[in-house]
Amino acid sequence: MAGPVDPEKQPAPAPDGNRPSLSLHVPEPKYRPGDTVDFSDIDIGTPGGQPRPDESAHPSQMGELAYSLIRVLGDDNQAHGPWNPRLDPETLRQMLGHMAMVRAFDERMFRGQRQGKTSFYMKCTGEEATSIAPAMALASDDMVFPSYRQQGILIARGYPLIEMINQIYSNKADKLKGRQLPIMYSSREHGFFSISGNLATQTPQAVGWAMASAIKGDSRIAATWVGEGSTAEGDFHSACTFAAVYNAPVILNIINNQWAISSFSGFAGAERTTFAARGLGYGIAALRVDGNDALACFAAAQWAANRARANQGPTLIEYFTYRAEGHSTSDDPSGYRSAQEREEWPLGDPVTRLKAHLIDIGEWDEERHAAMDLECAELVKATTKEAEKNGILGHGLHHPFHTMFEDVYEELPWHLEEQADQAIRERIAKFGTERPFG
Image 1 (spheres, helix red, strand yellow):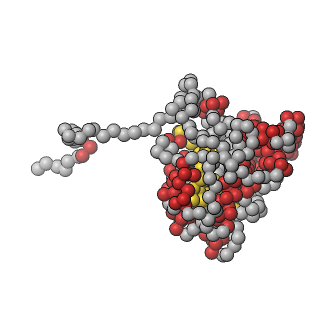
Image 2: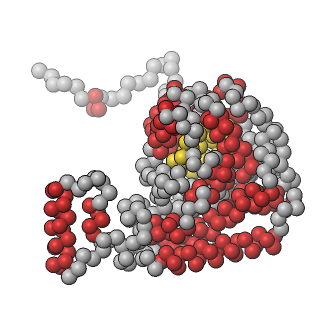
Image 3: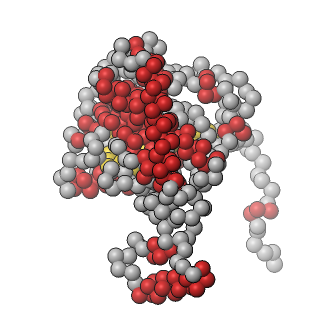
């Protein structure tokens, strides 16, 4: 008697003579290492050319804004069109200063990782405007749920640099007690939710927080940031569903920097449509913005915040930008993309563009800019030396051993008390003292 048929051992059926064979599409980036780069196919539109609908407009009226690009700063370094937020020069200088500080901080921390002072770091070079400008458009007590490249939010909100460095070095002064990967900050006082290395988890958390704020009748809204690659995660789509169904006062920011670690944006769907267009499918207001234009980033975030605060619901914003550096200190982008991409990117550099705008309107100059860069670098250097007194990764001055049993239970269960006591006795017997762990 014949046994069961193993389908894996059966020959594939021949295609029907009247039907073509199926084929699978695998996304492939246009440019690989050594290729000549040409971004002329990217339609960046005209600065000032996009309409600015009323903040209460229905999402169905925003189709054009999800497929085009909201821009304010032109090649003439002037602000154009209805999205011009008309910020005063002092606010613009403050914004430029925050971006300069982030660059100085990134450079020093990157160098520290290469010197073995920490295990990991991630720069946000080229993307500074996508975090700093929206942070300045929000209220200081609005809750933010960032990804791991939004250090600009903390700097814009005045979080002490030394606390950021202590966390990166996982030293004895790290408020998170060495329990988080470097750069995964958290600050309740600054409305900065704990960063998670699990991608896209912050999106449903932000929506849930926003729903809770609405239930309580509070006035605070939530905003979250996610990379374009992470929009392929189920958490992102669950968040969109809940945000749309319950009209949550939340802003869903997508940082489309063209690359998710070493895979390009096509694997998340960029070849088919814009990431902003995903919002329209859920019935969410959607904007696509020049992410290297600080004024456009501010204007879009302000528009979305006003909409949320007026109970008009969520907004999804795609910031179209470029990741100028590697994904992290563990990544070498020269292995998968052309070295020309950074220079050829058609939307330029956000710091250079804002600086040029301020100079052209007579509110800045090259001398002051150079002095500002130097001041930022010196401040970060001095703060780093101060933080290093608390220790660096792998060189002692870490939190005491017993802290590994803390901060999980309000009252430590008896069996964990026993384990902690036993472990501490063993360490004293072995080392003569309760040495820090790590």
